[in-house]
Image 1 (cartoon, rainbow, N blue to C red):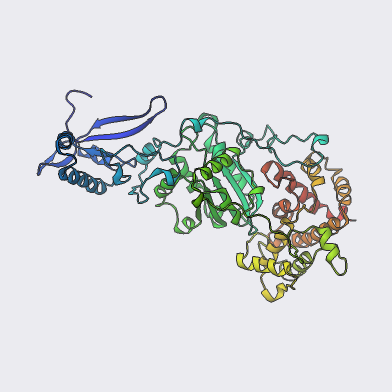
Image 2: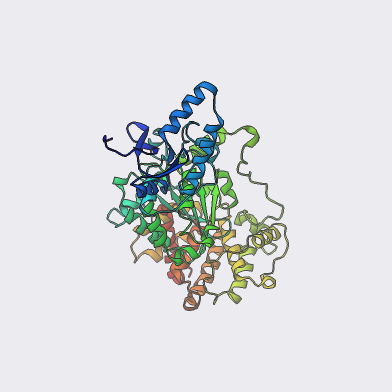
Amino acid sequence: MEADAPTGPLFTKVLQDPKLGQQPVCCRAAASKRHHGVATTQSKSTAHMALCSSTSGWISQTEEEVSADKDKETRTGPSSVSRRRRSSWWRRAARSRAVPLSKSHLPGRGPLPDISAPPSECGMSSELLVDLGEDPATAQLGQLKLSTLEDQQWPPDELPLSKSETDVSQGFDPGSPHLPWDHPFYDIARHQIIEVAGDDNFGRKVIVFSACRLPPHHQLDHQKLLMYLKATLDQYVESDYTLIYFHHGLTSENKPSLSWLRDAYREFDRKYKKNIKALYIVHPTMFIKTLLILFKPIISFKFGRKINYVSYLSELEDVVKCEQLVIPTRVREYDNKLRASLKPSVQPPMSPPHSPPLPDQVFGVSLAVLRERDPDGDPVPVVMRDTVSFLSEQGLEIEGIFRRSANVTLVKEVQLKYNSGAKVNFRDMEDVHLAAVILKTFLRELPEPLLTFQLYNDIVNFTSVSSDNQAEVMKTLVEGLPEENYAALRYLITFLAQVSANSEVNKMNNSNLAVVFGPNLLWGRDYAMSLSAIGPINNFTRSLLDQQHLVFT
C-alpha cells in the first residue's frame, strides 16, 4: 500500500486463490465513521458505500479498536467493551446492507465456513441480508468458494445406455452421442448435460440437468448451451413437465457467471415457465440457496413456489422412479457419502421396496397375466379399453389432450380401484385429462414395454432404414410381437390416428403424439431413459403413426 494512502477502517475479505487457497486480503478505504464519540468524515465515502453494499460479507473494524481489544482481553479476558463494539459493528453492517453471515463469524470468532458444504455442515445463518446489484453481485459471487480441490478431479461417468438382447449382434454403440458429429449442437450434446427421462409419476415429462457434466469454461460455449437447452425444451414445453437439477459437481472451474444465469432466466419467456410444474434442486448447498435469494427480485412469486429442495435421491421417488433417470455416478456416490455421514437416528428413508401384487392387480402386471384373468380372454387390457372408449367420445377435440397432468389424488384413487377389482366409469368423473394420464401411466408401469425389450435395439437403430423400406420393416417387427402386445399396440395406434385426424382442433399431430407416447412404449432393461435413445424411439413412433394403415393391414 502506498505511503500516502488514507487511514480508515480496515476491511478484511476472504478471497479464493487457485494456487494459494484462501488468503486474507486487506485494503483501506476512506469512510464516514464515529470514533470515540466524535463524527469524522473522510474524503472517499463513496468507495466505502460501494464496498459495504457488495454481496460477499465485508468485515470492518478500526485498527484502534483491534489493538485496544487485544490489550484488554490479554489482561482481563473478553470485556463488555469488546462485546459492545462487536454488537455495534453488526448494527453498522446491517445498516450499510452488507451481507453478514452470522454473529458467530464476527472478527475474532473463527474463520468463514465453506459454503460448498451441505447446509447442515455450514453453520451459516439462513437469514441473509442480500441486496441484488448488477456488476458488484457478479464480481463478488464469482469469488465464492464452490468446492474443494479434490471435488474438482472429474472422473469419467460410467453411463452405459439401455441395452437390448441384440445390442452385440447389431453393433449398437451405447456411448455414441444422440446427435451426429456435424450437427450444430454436437459439441454441447456430447457432454450429456441435459437429458429427457420419460414421464414422472403424474404423467409429466422429466427434463434432467446435471451440473457435474458441465466442462470447464474454456471448453464450453455457454451461449450455445442456452440455445441447446431452449431447443430441447421446445419439444416439451407445450406439455406439463418437471425439471430436475443435480447440483453436485458445480465448481469454480465450470460454474456459469451470475450475469449468464440472469440472462438465461430472462431468455425463457412465459412459454417455458407456464407449463413447468416443479423444479427439484437435488443436493442443494448454501451457494445455490444464496443464489436464489440474489435472484428473488426478478423471479416471479408463482415460479418461486415451484422450486423444491431435495436433500437425498430417495426423496425423488415421490415424484419419479429413480431407476428411469440417468443419474451421474458422481451424484450417486455423493448421495451415499451424505447418508453415511448421518447418525443412524436421522437416516433419511430409503426408496420403498416393491410391494407384492394384489390378487386383482392391474397396474404393473404383464399383458399375458391380464389376458388370463380377463373373463373373455380379451388381449386388450381393461384399462386401455375404458380410457380409449371414453377419450374417443369426449376427448378428440380437447386441445392439448395427453399434454396435461391430472389431480394426483384422483390418479391414485383410480389406480386403487382398478387394482382392487372395482369398476371404473370415467363418464361419471367427466375428466378427460384424468383418463389420458391413466392410459399413459398404465403403459409406463408395465413390467415389460408394449414394444418389448427384444425390439429395443432394432427400434433405436431404425433411423438407418431407408424410407422406402420403413413400412415393411415396421410391419415385420410388430408382427413378431406376442399376440397380446400386438393386439394392444394396434388398438392404441388406431385410436391415436383418430386423435391426429383432429389435430387442427386438439393440436396433437403425429409428431406431438410420438413425443408423448414414445417413452411409454419402449425403454431399456435398466429403465433408464436418455436423449440418446428417446430421439430414435420417438422417430419410430411417429413413423408408426404415419404409416399405420400399411403396418396393421
